[in-house]
Length: 476
Image (cartoon, rainbow, N blue to C red; front, top):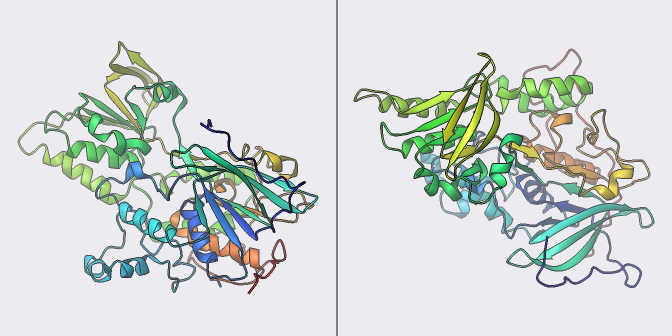
């Protein structure tokens, strides 16, 4: 990051009395840490602060397509499944906006995605522990003071460095979220300025320009790919749609949404999964793709309805929907066209596709923690694949000499399963972290959450753990 002016240096502990350590410092303010901050707010014994480099709360702005809904019920808000009486519930948000009765009569179990984003902003605007415009640069352990050091850069309204700072913490929680994933063959085109190849995360920003393209290709068969394809289809002229929709999966498959199938997103399954051997977990996660990477049935139906409507006067829409396709390489032709080299695995065949614009609905990957946690590397314990080991309380497994805890949120799919990024487990995980941190049941959690018994031996409910650091009561 570059700066127009030299930022103010951080406080030097050798020359100034260092500040008292906070009980918990959070890195990142997405839904996970926002949930944690909301549930921590009424716990007077906790001194917390959360840092986020963005200037305000923002949640997938490029995918807030009109009409798009969450794939989890509204009860999977930031707090309700841990504390239904919390003032930060979605229902209380509706009450504050005088919208309870309209919501009641709308009979919506799955709310609009834009409405969820607005709800989260309402919560973020109300919590004093949140500090936006603060980019955390490093987290390390100070063995002399027995605390974590969290270095950050304070940013101005243009995102430029304004000042440096340091906070001390008895415990930290990392909720840095995920980043758009761009397949290697398409990365040079995405990074090249002016080339009409984007990730779906930026779709709305470029939507109007892409709608004017002669031919458009959408790559990716998940919910985002389906929503982008449907939006394009609805806004292209009948008979001249000129859209290709390609996917690696063997079908444009529905998401598993049966009642017992959804029990894979319960604390019971999370505990079961965490107790499995590492090789078994690694085999399970990719095999369960339809639990979290499929398309909801309503979106599939809407796509089929729109395609069918365009056949009413005879003919077929000018669309191609092909699953089972890999993009081997990609490049530019002349100055305006893009050429995709495709391979169909089942047919063992290859072809080329020329298009004018490409939208990559290729999902997200967990942001790597190695750079941020370089100072903790000597203390971290890793698995056979060199990934951080994470215990059943969502803590990085560190050397016993580190007396504080480093929690992670939405970075533990390899240890906690497909529910790790699911919004339905957000409040439960936050409550687990706070119970671990305080050493008591600050938020009593259910001992059983699923009718399914996963495995022949059940994993017992995790009892309250002693807090990783004794908390100092706040001054009256």
